[in-house]
Length: 598
Image 1 (cartoon, rainbow, N blue to C red):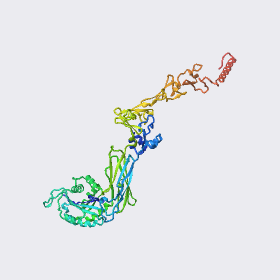
Image 2: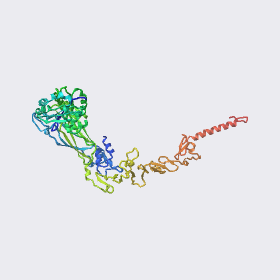
Image 3: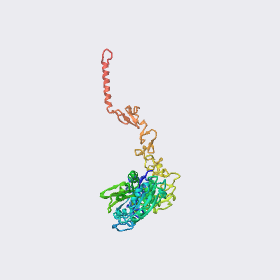
Image 4: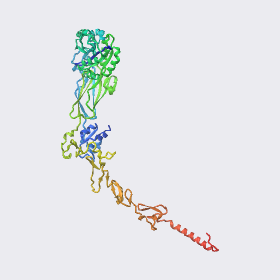
C-alpha cells in the first residue's frame, strides 16, 4: 500500500469557496434561397430584392438573393433591397470599483470587470465585437479551504498543521483584510476504517469558512485522528468534489466542470514523489497548481502564499456552452503591449494589483436556431464570480415578411404566402408560384432537372422550370418556336443565305439546317445539280474545271467563265499550229523521187 500526502486548498472569490479569481455574391446565389429569411442567413453581404417585376423571364425565385452590388446592377432599387444588420446594446456597464484597503464590502458589490451585460442581435456571418476591461482590485476578499489527507503517513504533518490557522491568518493580512478560512479532512478508500477502532468517513467538513480561524482552526485540527487508506488519489478527488458540490464520486472531467462553476482554484501541495502525478492533473484542471511539501509540512504556509500570488497574477477567460452554430473569438491586450490571439487571446499573465487589461471579444452566428429559441452566453475570469452576460437574438427573417399575405392567390390558388415580392410556399408545395407538389418532385432536384449538364442556366434561359420540367417561352412570331427538353432548340437561329433561313433550301431544326435534296452547306446554299456546270461541248466545266455547288471552279488558269469555256490566248495558239501544218505539207510536195521524208 503506497502512502501519499495531499493538501487541497480552495481559493474562492465571492460567497462560496472563494478564489482570487466567402466571394459573397457566389455564396448568395449558391444558397438557392427560397425566401428573404433564407437569403440573409446565407451570408452577411446577401440581400433580397422585393421588387415584384425584378426577375427576368425564366429566372428562379432564388435569383432575388444576391450580392448587394449585383442586385443594384441588375436594376433593383436600393429601397427595394432587404439587408438587415446586426447590433449590440449595453444593458449594464457599472464602473470598476475603487476599494480602499481595509474597507469591507459585500463581494457581490465589488466590480473588477466591465461591461456586465449586453443584448446582441446576430446576423448570420456578421460578428458583433466588444471590449471587456478587467482591473485587479486591491484588498479583494479571499476564502481559503484547507483539505487535509488523514492517511497514516500524515501523522507527523498533522502536528505542524495544528498551528496553521493563526499563522496563515497573520500572513494573509498582508494580502487582504477580508479573509476567511475553513478546514476539512479525507482519507482514501479504506481497508480498515481507522486506528484504535474509531469510526471515520472519507470526507468530513471540520470547520466551515470563518473569519475567526485563529480561534477555531487550531482547536478543531487538534482533535483530528489519523486513518489508513487504500489508494492514492481517488479519495482526494471524492473529497474535492464534495467540497465543491457535495456530489457523488467524480471523474476528472466532472471535477473540472464543478470547480469552474463554483469559481474554485486548486493548489495541490504534495511530497516530492508525487510531483509528476499531480503535475499531469494540473494540466487538465485550469487555474490549478502543484507545489512540493516538505516531509513534515513545515513550509506549507509559504507554499500557500507563493502559489496564491502566482495563480492570482494570471487571468483566464472562459465562456459557457455556446448555442449551436455560434462561435466566439478572443484577442487580449496585456501588460507591456503584449497581444494574444487564438487560445492565448483568452489570458493575460503577470497582473499586479491595480493593473488593467483588455480583451476584444467577437461573437458570430453561422446559422439560425430553431424558431423562438432564446439563448445567452456568460463570459467570466476563471476563479471569479463576476461575469459578462450576453443575451442573444438571431436575425432570421426580414422586415418585409411581416407584411406578407397568407394563402395569396398570387401563389397558385393560395398555396403560399406572398411576401417580399415572391411566394413562400406552404409545406408540401414548391415552385416559383408554389405550383408543384413535393410528392411529384423534390425541391432539391427540381431546378437540376431543368439544367443541361455543366450549365447554370435554367431551361437554357428560354423557358420556365415547372415542377422539374421546362415549359418553353412563346415567341411573338408564332412560326418561331423554342423546343427541346431544356428549351435549347429553336427554328429561327440557323445560318442564312441571301437573307433567308437555310437559304430557303432547307428547314431549321434545333439551330441546324436540314437541307432539301440536291442542297448542302450550313445554310443549304450549295446546289448539287450539275446542269448549270455543263459546257457547250457537253463536258462539265469544259473539262478544265470542277463543279462545286452548281458553279464551275476553273482549274486551268487559261480558262474562265461560267463553264470555263473562255480562253483569250487560245486563238494565237491555233494559228501557230496551222502554220506548222502548212510548212510540213509544202515540204512534202517538193521532195523528189516520189517518197516522203519526215
